[in-house]
Amino acid sequence: MAGKILITGATGTVGSAVGKALQSKGADFVAASREVQKVKEKFGSGVAAIAFDFADHSTYESATQGVDKVFLLGPPVDPGMDRLLTPFVHHLREKGINRVVYLSAFGVEEVKDSMPFHATLEKLLKDNGFAVTFLRPTFFAQNFGNYERDNIENRKVVYSPAGQGKAAFVDIKDVGEVAARVLLEPGHEGKVYTLTGPVAYSYGDVAGILSEVRGETIHYPAPSPEEYAQVLNSAGAPEFVAGYMNKVYGLIRDGHADYASPDVENLLGRRPGDLRSVLVKDLGKQA
Image (tube, rainbow, N blue to C red; front, side, top):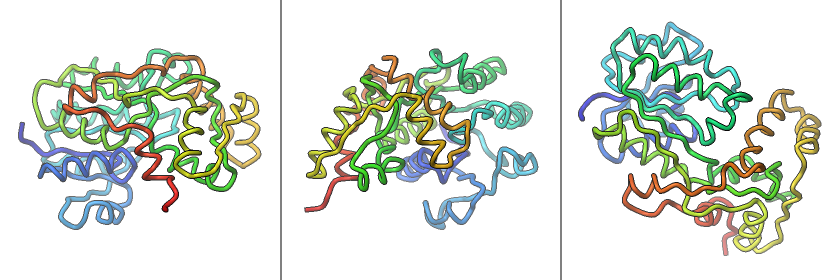
Protein backbone atom coordinates (compact mmCIF):
# COMPACT_ATOMS: atom_id res chain seq x y z
CA MET A 1 0.00 0.00 0.00
CA ALA A 2 1.60 3.21 -1.13
CA GLY A 3 1.16 6.46 0.75
CA LYS A 4 3.03 8.94 2.86
CA ILE A 5 3.38 8.06 6.55
CA LEU A 6 3.61 10.49 9.46
CA ILE A 7 5.59 9.33 12.50
CA THR A 8 4.81 11.24 15.67
CA GLY A 9 7.43 11.18 18.43
CA ALA A 10 10.04 10.48 15.77
CA THR A 11 13.09 11.31 17.90
CA GLY A 12 12.06 9.13 20.84
CA THR A 13 13.22 5.59 21.42
CA VAL A 14 10.29 3.87 19.72
CA GLY A 15 9.69 6.54 17.08
CA SER A 16 13.34 6.32 16.05
CA ALA A 17 13.09 2.55 15.70
CA VAL A 18 9.99 2.88 13.52
CA GLY A 19 11.68 5.53 11.36
CA LYS A 20 14.83 3.44 10.94
CA ALA A 21 12.76 0.42 9.91
CA LEU A 22 10.79 2.47 7.38
CA GLN A 23 13.98 4.10 6.12
CA SER A 24 15.54 0.67 5.50
CA LYS A 25 12.55 -0.21 3.32
CA GLY A 26 12.69 3.01 1.30
CA ALA A 27 9.29 4.12 2.56
CA ASP A 28 7.93 7.63 2.11
CA PHE A 29 7.55 9.13 5.57
CA VAL A 30 7.65 12.36 7.51
CA ALA A 31 9.35 12.45 10.91
CA ALA A 32 7.53 14.78 13.29
CA SER A 33 9.11 16.19 16.43
CA ARG A 34 9.30 19.30 18.54
CA GLU A 35 13.03 19.29 17.75
CA VAL A 36 13.58 19.16 14.00
CA GLN A 37 17.36 19.24 14.32
CA LYS A 38 17.23 15.98 16.28
CA VAL A 39 15.31 14.39 13.40
CA LYS A 40 18.16 15.22 11.05
CA GLU A 41 20.67 13.83 13.53
CA LYS A 42 18.68 10.59 13.85
CA PHE A 43 17.89 9.95 10.20
CA GLY A 44 20.10 12.18 8.07
CA SER A 45 19.20 15.06 5.79
CA GLY A 46 17.34 12.85 3.31
CA VAL A 47 14.37 12.30 5.61
CA ALA A 48 11.57 14.89 5.66
CA ALA A 49 11.35 16.52 9.10
CA ILE A 50 8.47 18.61 10.41
CA ALA A 51 8.00 20.60 13.61
CA PHE A 52 5.10 19.14 15.56
CA ASP A 53 3.69 19.32 19.06
CA PHE A 54 0.44 17.70 20.23
CA ALA A 55 -0.08 20.68 22.54
CA ASP A 56 0.26 23.18 19.67
CA HIS A 57 -2.73 22.76 17.36
CA SER A 58 -1.20 25.17 14.85
CA THR A 59 1.34 22.45 13.93
CA TYR A 60 -1.31 19.89 12.93
CA GLU A 61 -2.03 21.05 9.39
CA SER A 62 1.54 21.20 8.11
CA ALA A 63 2.41 17.88 9.76
CA THR A 64 -0.46 16.06 8.03
CA GLN A 65 -0.12 17.67 4.60
CA GLY A 66 -0.18 14.89 1.99
CA VAL A 67 -0.19 12.18 4.66
CA ASP A 68 -2.20 8.96 4.23
CA LYS A 69 -1.20 7.02 7.36
CA VAL A 70 -0.07 7.90 10.88
CA PHE A 71 2.04 6.12 13.46
CA LEU A 72 0.52 7.60 16.59
CA LEU A 73 2.78 7.70 19.62
CA GLY A 74 2.15 9.81 22.70
CA PRO A 75 4.72 11.05 25.23
CA PRO A 76 5.72 8.53 27.89
CA VAL A 77 4.89 8.93 31.59
CA ASP A 78 2.03 11.34 30.92
CA PRO A 79 -1.18 10.37 32.73
CA GLY A 80 -3.03 13.02 30.71
CA MET A 81 -1.96 11.61 27.36
CA ASP A 82 -5.52 10.91 26.21
CA ARG A 83 -6.47 14.57 26.66
CA LEU A 84 -3.30 15.66 24.87
CA LEU A 85 -3.81 13.41 21.82
CA THR A 86 -7.60 13.69 21.44
CA PRO A 87 -7.58 16.99 19.46
CA PHE A 88 -5.08 15.50 17.01
CA VAL A 89 -7.25 12.40 16.56
CA HIS A 90 -10.16 14.70 15.73
CA HIS A 91 -7.94 16.56 13.26
CA LEU A 92 -7.12 13.29 11.50
CA ARG A 93 -10.81 12.46 11.27
CA GLU A 94 -11.58 15.88 9.77
CA LYS A 95 -8.74 15.49 7.25
CA GLY A 96 -9.96 12.04 6.21
CA ILE A 97 -6.73 10.36 7.29
CA ASN A 98 -8.19 7.03 8.29
CA ARG A 99 -5.24 4.64 8.62
CA VAL A 100 -3.60 4.75 12.06
CA VAL A 101 -1.18 2.48 13.88
CA TYR A 102 -1.38 3.34 17.58
CA LEU A 103 1.33 2.45 20.07
CA SER A 104 -0.69 1.35 23.06
CA ALA A 105 0.73 -0.79 25.86
CA PHE A 106 0.75 -4.28 27.28
CA GLY A 107 -1.87 -4.87 29.98
CA VAL A 108 -4.35 -2.21 28.86
CA GLU A 109 -7.24 -4.16 30.36
CA GLU A 110 -5.55 -4.67 33.73
CA VAL A 111 -4.82 -0.96 34.26
CA LYS A 112 -7.82 0.65 32.55
CA ASP A 113 -9.19 1.86 35.90
CA SER A 114 -5.94 3.16 37.41
CA MET A 115 -4.24 4.30 34.15
CA PRO A 116 -7.06 4.69 31.62
CA PHE A 117 -5.39 6.81 28.93
CA HIS A 118 -4.44 3.99 26.53
CA ALA A 119 -7.86 2.36 26.86
CA THR A 120 -9.51 5.76 26.31
CA LEU A 121 -7.50 6.42 23.15
CA GLU A 122 -8.10 2.92 21.80
CA LYS A 123 -11.86 3.45 22.28
CA LEU A 124 -11.70 6.91 20.69
CA LEU A 125 -9.99 5.53 17.59
CA LYS A 126 -12.42 2.62 17.27
CA ASP A 127 -15.51 4.75 17.91
CA ASN A 128 -14.44 7.22 15.22
CA GLY A 129 -14.16 4.52 12.58
CA PHE A 130 -10.40 4.58 12.00
CA ALA A 131 -8.77 1.65 10.22
CA VAL A 132 -6.55 1.19 13.25
CA THR A 133 -3.98 -1.34 14.37
CA PHE A 134 -3.11 -1.44 18.05
CA LEU A 135 0.44 -2.39 19.02
CA ARG A 136 0.71 -3.39 22.67
CA PRO A 137 4.39 -3.86 23.56
CA THR A 138 5.45 -5.14 26.94
CA PHE A 139 8.40 -3.71 28.88
CA PHE A 140 11.31 -2.70 26.65
CA ALA A 141 14.59 -4.62 26.90
CA GLN A 142 16.46 -1.36 26.27
CA ASN A 143 15.01 0.23 29.42
CA PHE A 144 17.85 -1.23 31.48
CA GLY A 145 20.44 0.65 29.44
CA ASN A 146 18.31 3.76 29.00
CA TYR A 147 17.03 4.21 32.56
CA GLU A 148 18.89 1.86 34.90
CA ARG A 149 22.44 2.39 33.68
CA ASP A 150 23.55 4.50 36.62
CA ASN A 151 22.11 2.01 39.11
CA ILE A 152 23.72 -0.92 37.33
CA GLU A 153 27.14 0.59 36.65
CA ASN A 154 27.61 2.59 39.84
CA ARG A 155 25.38 1.00 42.48
CA LYS A 156 25.46 -2.59 41.14
CA VAL A 157 21.67 -2.98 41.40
CA VAL A 158 18.56 -3.13 39.27
CA TYR A 159 15.97 -1.17 41.19
CA SER A 160 12.32 -1.64 40.27
CA PRO A 161 9.29 -2.61 42.38
CA ALA A 162 8.56 -5.70 40.27
CA GLY A 163 8.57 -8.25 43.10
CA GLN A 164 9.18 -11.79 41.88
CA GLY A 165 7.03 -11.41 38.78
CA LYS A 166 8.25 -11.94 35.24
CA ALA A 167 8.07 -10.14 31.89
CA ALA A 168 9.09 -11.14 28.36
CA PHE A 169 11.00 -7.92 27.65
CA VAL A 170 10.73 -6.87 24.00
CA ASP A 171 13.53 -5.52 21.83
CA ILE A 172 12.55 -2.04 20.62
CA LYS A 173 13.99 -2.85 17.20
CA ASP A 174 11.36 -5.57 16.86
CA VAL A 175 8.66 -3.06 17.75
CA GLY A 176 9.96 -0.76 15.02
CA GLU A 177 10.04 -3.54 12.43
CA VAL A 178 6.52 -4.67 13.31
CA ALA A 179 5.22 -1.10 13.07
CA ALA A 180 6.86 -0.64 9.67
CA ARG A 181 5.36 -3.87 8.39
CA VAL A 182 1.80 -3.12 9.47
CA LEU A 183 2.07 0.40 8.06
CA LEU A 184 3.33 -0.74 4.68
CA GLU A 185 1.16 -3.75 3.91
CA PRO A 186 -2.60 -4.36 3.93
CA GLY A 187 -4.47 -6.76 6.15
CA HIS A 188 -3.62 -5.40 9.60
CA GLU A 189 -6.55 -3.03 10.03
CA GLY A 190 -8.63 -3.85 13.09
CA LYS A 191 -5.91 -6.07 14.57
CA VAL A 192 -4.34 -6.01 18.03
CA TYR A 193 -0.76 -7.27 18.33
CA THR A 194 0.90 -8.02 21.65
CA LEU A 195 4.64 -7.55 21.27
CA THR A 196 6.99 -9.41 23.62
CA GLY A 197 10.32 -11.14 23.65
CA PRO A 198 10.56 -14.96 23.47
CA VAL A 199 11.18 -15.65 27.18
CA ALA A 200 9.83 -14.18 30.42
CA TYR A 201 12.40 -13.18 33.04
CA SER A 202 12.12 -12.02 36.65
CA TYR A 203 14.21 -9.08 37.80
CA GLY A 204 16.27 -11.58 39.76
CA ASP A 205 16.94 -13.33 36.45
CA VAL A 206 17.89 -9.98 34.90
CA ALA A 207 20.35 -9.30 37.71
CA GLY A 208 21.88 -12.73 37.10
CA ILE A 209 22.27 -12.10 33.37
CA LEU A 210 23.80 -8.69 34.03
CA SER A 211 26.23 -10.26 36.50
CA GLU A 212 27.35 -12.68 33.77
CA VAL A 213 27.68 -10.16 30.95
CA ARG A 214 29.41 -7.56 33.14
CA GLY A 215 31.65 -9.91 35.10
CA GLU A 216 30.54 -8.46 38.43
CA THR A 217 27.71 -9.12 40.84
CA ILE A 218 24.54 -7.13 40.19
CA HIS A 219 21.86 -7.35 42.88
CA TYR A 220 18.09 -7.08 42.75
CA PRO A 221 16.87 -5.83 46.16
CA ALA A 222 13.17 -6.16 45.19
CA PRO A 223 12.07 -2.89 46.78
CA SER A 224 8.49 -2.60 47.96
CA PRO A 225 6.29 -0.02 46.23
CA GLU A 226 6.62 2.15 49.34
CA GLU A 227 10.42 1.93 49.35
CA TYR A 228 10.53 2.67 45.63
CA ALA A 229 8.31 5.73 46.02
CA GLN A 230 10.46 7.03 48.88
CA VAL A 231 13.65 6.69 46.81
CA LEU A 232 12.13 8.49 43.80
CA ASN A 233 10.69 11.26 45.95
CA SER A 234 14.03 11.69 47.74
CA ALA A 235 15.74 12.00 44.36
CA GLY A 236 13.44 14.87 43.45
CA ALA A 237 11.16 13.13 40.95
CA PRO A 238 7.77 14.80 40.45
CA GLU A 239 5.29 13.39 42.94
CA PHE A 240 3.05 11.65 40.39
CA VAL A 241 5.94 9.65 38.91
CA ALA A 242 6.28 7.17 41.76
CA GLY A 243 2.58 6.39 41.76
CA TYR A 244 2.56 6.01 37.99
CA MET A 245 5.61 3.74 37.91
CA ASN A 246 4.34 1.61 40.79
CA LYS A 247 1.17 0.94 38.80
CA VAL A 248 3.21 0.07 35.71
CA TYR A 249 5.53 -2.31 37.56
CA GLY A 250 2.51 -3.73 39.32
CA LEU A 251 1.75 -5.52 36.05
CA ILE A 252 4.91 -7.55 36.58
CA ARG A 253 4.61 -7.77 40.35
CA ASP A 254 1.05 -9.14 40.15
CA GLY A 255 1.83 -11.69 37.44
CA HIS A 256 0.05 -10.01 34.53
CA ALA A 257 3.17 -9.69 32.32
CA ASP A 258 4.36 -13.32 32.53
CA TYR A 259 3.48 -14.05 28.92
CA ALA A 260 5.44 -14.55 25.70
CA SER A 261 3.30 -13.69 22.68
CA PRO A 262 3.78 -15.30 19.24
CA ASP A 263 2.88 -12.07 17.43
CA VAL A 264 6.40 -10.76 16.72
CA GLU A 265 7.52 -14.11 15.28
CA ASN A 266 4.32 -14.46 13.23
CA LEU A 267 4.69 -10.97 11.79
CA LEU A 268 8.44 -10.94 11.17
CA GLY A 269 8.99 -14.62 10.37
CA ARG A 270 11.78 -14.97 12.90
CA ARG A 271 12.32 -15.40 16.62
CA PRO A 272 12.10 -12.10 18.54
CA GLY A 273 15.26 -10.59 19.93
CA ASP A 274 16.09 -11.87 23.41
CA LEU A 275 16.83 -9.76 26.47
CA ARG A 276 20.31 -11.22 26.92
CA SER A 277 21.46 -9.98 23.51
CA VAL A 278 20.25 -6.46 24.28
CA LEU A 279 21.95 -6.45 27.69
CA VAL A 280 25.23 -7.65 26.16
CA LYS A 281 25.12 -4.85 23.59
CA ASP A 282 23.96 -2.08 25.94
CA LEU A 283 25.61 -2.97 29.24
CA GLY A 284 28.21 -5.67 28.67
CA LYS A 285 31.79 -4.88 29.59
CA GLN A 286 34.16 -4.92 26.66
CA ALA A 287 36.95 -7.50 26.90
